[in-house]
Amino acid sequence: MVRDPFTRRRALGFLAAAPFALLSTTFLTRVALAVENDDDAALMKRFDFLSQNGNVNCSAEFEASIATMPADARLQGSCCAPMDGARYLTQIKGIRKYADLSEVPPDPYDIPAGIAQKLMPYYDLTLNGTEQAAYDFAMTNSDMRGPCCCQCWRWKVYGGLGKHLIKDRQFTGQQLVDLWNIAQGCGGPASAK
Image (cartoon, rainbow, N blue to C red; front, side, top):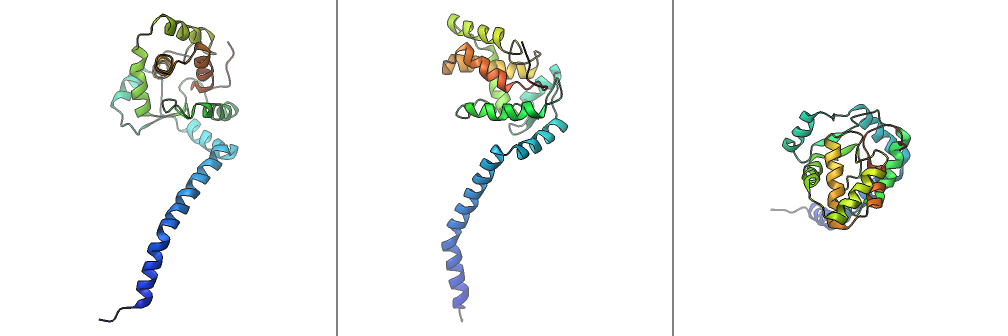
């Protein structure tokens, strides 16, 4: 049996280079994602998709259906008002402040069902007096006078998030106001009190 030394050499060379190629691909993917995150044009493409392909609504039936969705299903778009492009850019950039909190959806118009499923039960958390005072402060002082403009699934998701952050991460009422104001998913431009 005659072996082709070039084939074997090529194979060994490929095996030696493969980790570097994989590393380069991974690195380039991360670089591309980082660039997209800071690229207004890429964010506006995302906005165009989400604003035209929403699958959410404020009905009790939709809220109930979240529990049966696959964890990787996406809750996309706004329920109450058309999305606003300028507001969307502001929100996505503002939410980055909370990137170290895995519970905070990085895009209020594209929420994985698994995150919603995790956060909704927190809405029923019982808070102690100090915690409840912080939550009440956020309810009174946030732009929407709560986590959303209506008491829909988003109200329970972001209300549950708020209670969790106050109880388990010692958020103040003002910190929750700041989060709710930047992360509201009702659509429209920034709301005034």
